Image (cartoon, rainbow, N blue to C red; front, side, top):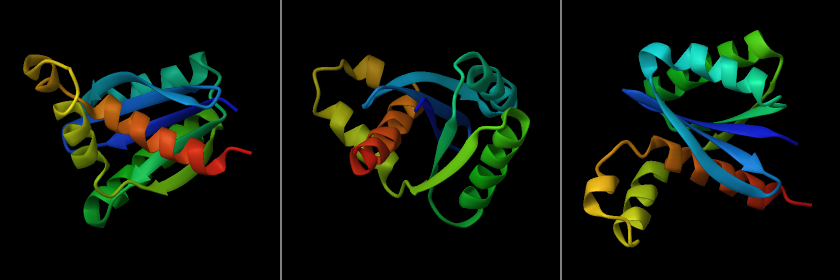
Length: 126
């Protein structure tokens, strides 16, 4: 199944795609253009389901609304998963990696989306 994961943030939206059972960071979009870009991507990549990382409060509501709109426009299925602390864990993993500090200071939302997707793939692999 071809999946796309979303890390919905206050400024940006990170997305990741899967290749079989491996999640791969794909892109980071500014929120102002994210809906159109993600809809185009879902259509061009023949995505069957969108995995959305949900935190809590207003951000959770906004993320749900965004993803429901993507799914309504594309016919993709909606899959919700807990994403609590995913961004923080992604920052920590990148900090302990060989990646340069300059590169780590760029938007990493797509890496968080890949972590969300990989967690989903690992727990649903059969």
